[in-house]
Image (cartoon, rainbow, N blue to C red; front, top):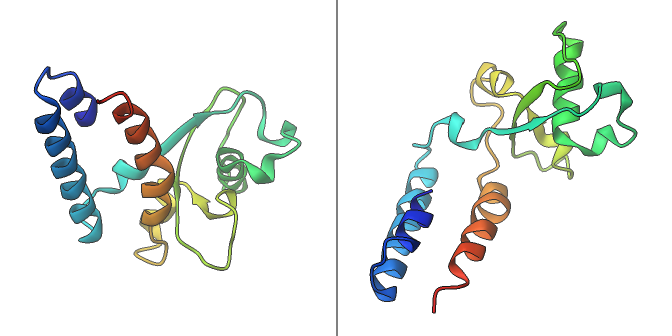
Length: 136
């Protein structure tokens, strides 16, 4: 949202670009120092059907997390909004395998770490790049 505010501020291009770069540098610094709250990394996605009804569920992070929630006795019907965090684990290649409910990450007490590189490359840079493309 901050980047969009900078773009729509009406300020000169150089000032907008400078503000965006300063903001991104600040975010990167906070991430590097582990100062960002876990909530900042939570992704939400709604189930359109029951988790068992997804033929490719093992490839969809929200479905994998929903099934894990069900294994722990939680009710997860179609329409449920699933929260998940992508964690770093070099032994697992797919994002779905590395997705965990935020409560699971907190309970792991540091054994599950947020995959910061993935978030920067997949969740932060692409939308900011698309927002900044029209800046002349």
